[in-house]
Length: 293
Image 1 (spheres, helix red, strand yellow):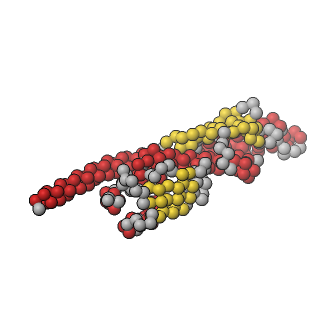
Image 2 (image 1 turned 180 degrees about the vertical axis):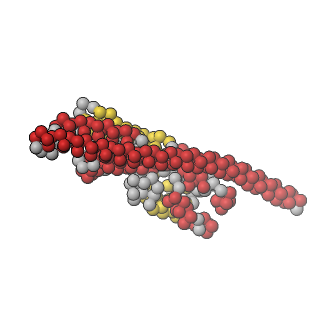
Image 3 (image 1 turned 60 degrees about the vertical axis):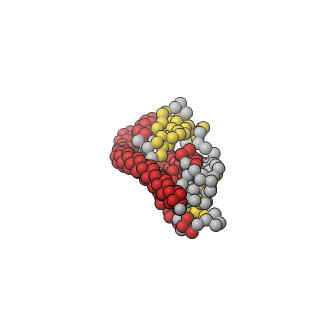
């Protein structure tokens, strides 16, 4: 009897120590999350400031274009009796427009330089303040705008975007292409972070396609367990977003009812948070206790 009580006390103390350790780990992670959120707020404020500067520069570029064309039209109408600008004026206007456009896009992760063929753009991608990959796009501007060469992945709809915008609105073309590349880079970054930081909670390797718009994995929320009661399938219907539009979470047959009840909450978290941050939110003592043997 005494041995049984002693064993019971030891079991309670061991359980309390485990809870204290988990609570301490959670407190550290919450502090780290708060610091990251503060950094993210600062970055968002900076992005908003840069967007305002971009809009102001765009307005100045448009006004400059109108003034240049209006001025040249007045000069040529007095000499030739027509309101058509000269070839030299048009060329100067194109050069100034491209230079101004490069300055505008520099503020949004798109930079470029003039080349003997036309202009070469560099689109830099980032996710939550972390700079990722850069992609290059070399354009020919005469006699019409054409893509000479590029490093854009084959699964990005470059040809469709070019057909839709390249000849009529190059700014919109670059902006749409940047949205696709940044969303793809963000999805891939999240998948990499999940695999690197939470491999002990995944069963095997995360399954994903080249575009990273479909992810499939089995997981647990406690870590260092041999069982993986949850299965998730994340679908990204909007290719210009880095968060899933659909998250299907289910439990393996025979899983405790307390776990099955959490699938809807997990699905909601996956749709709202970055993938690795979703797993950080699963690190609560309550989640871990539900999976304790």
